[in-house]
Image 1 (spheres, one colour):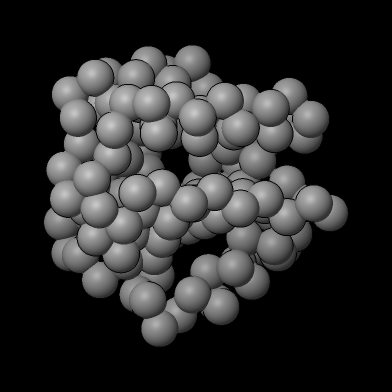
Image 2: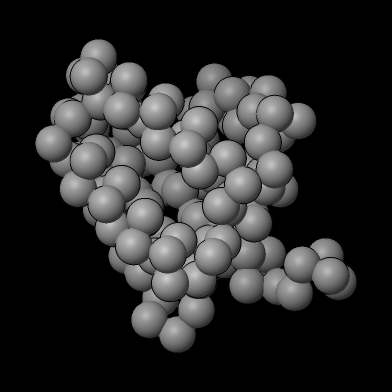
Length: 123
């Protein structure tokens, strides 16, 4: 399951992952993200991973293509999870993407939101 929430007053988007991700569900979220990117130029994303019950191969492929198309469209990404392998993956991706990525444990979700909202010049 994917849950998408957008702050109507800023470029901040929150996506929660909880369970298995299918292609149709991913494509719906991707369309909303692309619309936000079109409105703002770049967006800041908070991704909360509660559980990941697998990703359909077609959803994984769609995610990869989306990521390659939008490499420069994210200014900051915060990943909130207690899953160590996802934390490791976020750290491994950091030098490969144009945006700043930080990991936060679930109890620091408010700190993740504050970091995303902070002026990128002062952070």
